[in-house]
Length: 249
Length: 249
DNA sequence: TTAAAAGCTGACCATTCGGTCAGATTTTTT
DNA sequence: AAAAAATCTGACCGAATGGTCAGCTTTTAA
Image 1: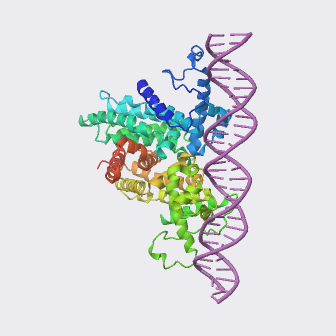
Image 2: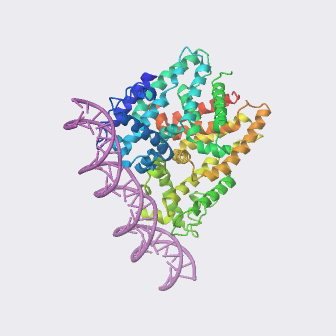
Image 3: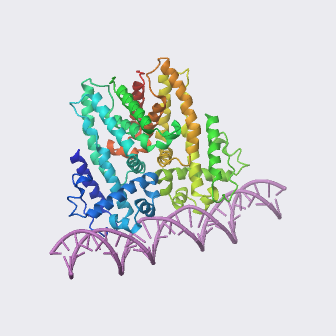
């Protein structure tokens, strides 16, 4: 997992950094260390590679995720982004060069998150346990990082132009690999016959919907689901999927 | 269904027409007849209420759906919209006043479509038949009007500010009503115990994902699903849901 | 046939947009 | 302490945006 997300992070930065009209005014040393954002080591190794830069980038990215989630790429202006980060517009340009580069940086962070969790699906695992764990992971992400989910959803809704390459390579490979595991379970009679690819589509859809379409869900439910509602949602998805896969508890 | 969609159309137009800074320069006679777009009666009753207006509005709305689906509200400019419709920008303003009014008109059309199909869920029906029919209806909409689905998804992703009222009233009422039917089936032992509200969320998510996240699906599948792929998707969703509801075929 | 209504559009406008840059300030290195 | 590097930002710019409007043409009603 750590390996995977690191590899993807690189791939993203790569795809990203190449095609700008103007290169950023500052070095922009593309390196997120192995331990990404632990606050403890902050003071110790704070010497070398732009401690200020790291902090500011983090501030900006966090604010940008919120803003992009609310309005999408086109719907967010640099001045909004700047205001949300509590910094002048020029400072954002100093750190990320262009609005698109900032957007891609947000996406890169999210993508790594999004691809995690599938390690639970292993040949040796019991299908029910593996699926339950995967669903829990996805629902947790939905509950704890709804903005991340929404930015990701928005990107795909509009054609995934910025992350298409990664989807076509890494995500496709991941699904292929895990599909073989599921097919193994099926032919071993351990679960019902379900098209693995479509199973992934359904899992992603059912879990992400609680973040992406939260406004619809709130409207139908009459009020935001809250912690209790989300717990109930998770139970629903778990039992729904397990039953659909012929894995009655 | 006809009654429902008409009522909603009105409600939408109402919510719509009120809150503009400037009122449209032309009368804008808000009336879509009962038989919305049959080409046969076109020549016969073409006399009274602005035949040209009706045709032009239709042209513009159709083009706008495509454009809004691709780029969202903020990402679409009036000049793009105009170019897609093959008309000068001022003409769009003549017919719809503002970009937002045009967007709302597109949404209103879509919303009626989206709310259809739930009539299949009736107390007297067999649960398996009813659910299968509902899923088919949703999948058909996804396959035939993916742009409509995407505009709708985009609207909800960004808070459903333009249709929140209708979701909170009409959609909520619909779900409440149909949930009672499903609860009836459950307590009669006709299907497994599934939270009806969350069942709807899952159904919507699983079916719409094939339009809204088509780029992701194409990337993972290696190529667009096409007609055969969509047929397979429908079979997957049907059997998946039926099994999850304890309705083995 | 004529007057009125509806349809149409090129030219224009104020505002906002993403982005640049010179130069000041702060931090780090020597 | 001095030099170098990195950080920071107000002022500015050309382009694009949504929207307006006067005046034209076409369609409809009288």
